Amino acid sequence: MLIISYDISNDKLRTRFAKMLSKYGGRMQYSMFRIKNSDRVLDNVTIEIKSKFEKKFGQSDSVIIMRLSKQCKIDRFGYAKNDDEDLIVI
Image (cartoon, rainbow, N blue to C red; front, side, top):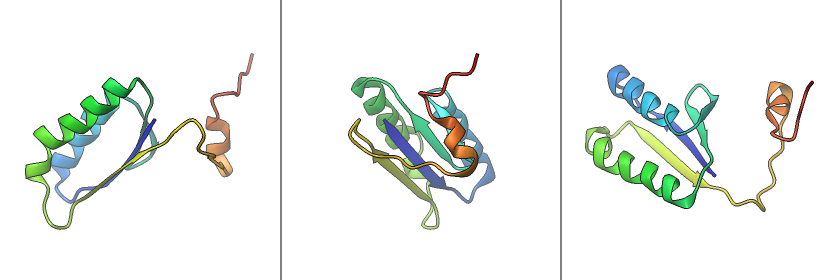
């Protein structure tokens, strides 16, 4: 799983970046996405960021990609605790 956090100052670039990420996963916060899939898809996301966006980032822009394994422990509080995948409501 990837967690991608970004702070991009250019509105147009930030919107395009978010739309690209939304093809692969869902928002966790306003500028944070969670992407779960195969290693190949996760690598493709990184390649797409490098090829389509990296040259357009300014000195004030920031993108952080965190690769999480299944062994990582995630604590959730507030609304986020409802976002647990093991939760099934019928």
